[in-house]
Length: 175
Image 1 (cartoon, helix red, strand yellow):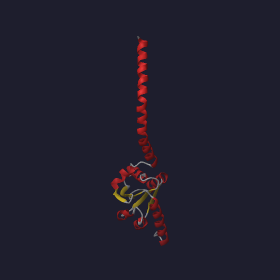
Image 2 (cartoon, one colour):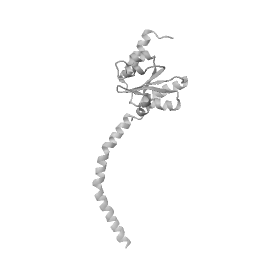
Image 3 (tube, one colour):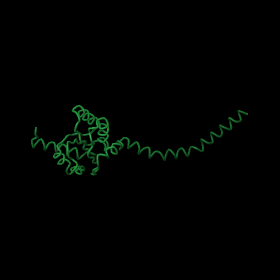
Image 4 (cartoon, one colour):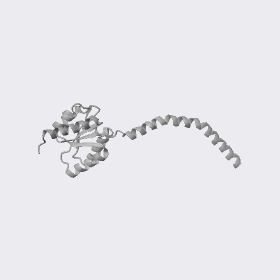
């Protein structure tokens, strides 16, 4: 059933609003997936905070125009599903990557992040980006390491003195 003009405008507005706030976008070809598999993918997307939508390519081109994902316009050919990362840049990539391991029919065509267009082969690299919490944890460990090393260095002479005294005491008790 064909969409009416007002329905098309609503779809374009919805996808454009999502694209304006998304961190990254992935276009994947879903040809050959069953309804059950697509339903599972959509359920996983909701849990991960990923906006997943099958949109006609002409409408998708209009929706991403004027956003960071305008670079995707040339790559939108064939039956594609758009996945936008809403929480962190790698969430959509992790979702698509994990799902495509089990379902080889889901094939990534285009990856876009920060206004840059990448081939579908870059999906794995994007999926390895840390989440916000992981990035903060890594930053804190890097910031904490020099202080920890300094405290250990300052405490070592005293600890060495205590160990030496304990060894002398043990030696005298043994004699």
